[in-house]
Image (cartoon, rainbow, N blue to C red):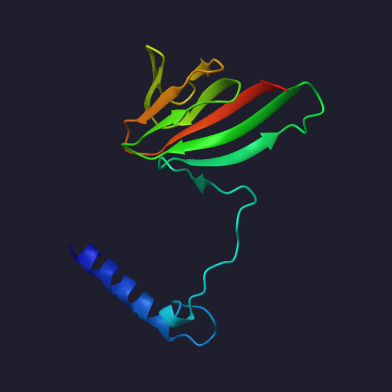
Length: 145
């Protein structure tokens, strides 16, 4: 008991002496909320809201010089939301984070990190996030020009 009391007393004295120092060492002063200015940083490829509540951002797109075009984008489905995916071509979807269910036609695919599934051209996949964190998917779409 005596050891705990001595340790607590040493901690209080140390904190008080740090706050009273004038040599630049010690506790930081309290922040002034009026002086707060947020950073102007904007990521090069930020997520943009879609009409269905999901977020999407481009990752890569070929320049279109070949007869095939490849479009890679990230799709983020918030918790307890469902979003459709209707690719212009064939799509390969890789689950990066989160959990959910993808329904393609009558086939259901349980989504966890590392799960991959495909969507044929003309099909629509229904992506449902049934977890408590966002469902992050990387979508690779290949179209013939």
